[in-house]
Image 1 (cartoon, rainbow, N blue to C red):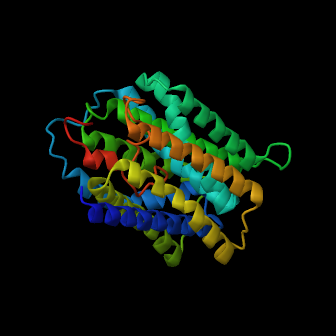
Image 2 (spheres, rainbow, N blue to C red; image 1 turned 135 degrees about the horizontal axis):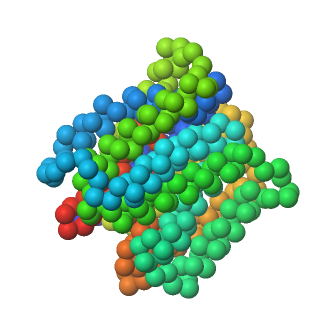
Length: 318
């Protein structure tokens, strides 16, 4: 690929993650009034027509019956869980803390790939995982600070993102794109619709616009990532996700008066360094047959997004 094209793709990825971060600011504002169930429901509902546009482009023939129904069901549960948990975390924790904990997802992908994909993880990558998890402990600081449900929610979101990503890597070659996109979307709206009955708050027009913005930003940023991964190596694009910690600091200070403390920044630095090391090891080749982290091309915590890997999938790849 041409150097100019790759630079442009990286810049587009940086812009995509800036949009994702702006999306999270809107979620944090909405979370002051609405339950995560209600935010996920409406943003998922608004995203449904957008995702439908992706479904009609599915060129593969067949029905909507999953080849691996239990894996599809488990992945759909993860797709519902990850945005709900993340949105709750954004509501109750500083942005920088949430991002630091969500950055643990590549570490968890590396671990989950061992039993699910049969991935062989070398000593160096396992050390990186352990150091990264140590960074999580630095951010959370159990014993020094009071653990909140938001901390557990952010880690649950990271785990759900990791699990759905590994499952997609396992079954993506055999399941139709329509199956992989439609079932999570339906379950998302259905489950959130039932849960919303117990927490519903009247929605003003401006709030409805905010929820539509969440869906639009998520979908737009996902399309931009498709462009980036199509025109540049995954090893160049994947690290751009960590730019969100910069936006978290900027938005946190300017909008929410959240000044990241030193321990959060140190822990985030450890987690980011571990993730970058794993990405670099997979990109080198010879150390990973599945490259599960590099194959994870979506953020995974937004109901308005779609799995980038599904759109980019080729018969011989996934």
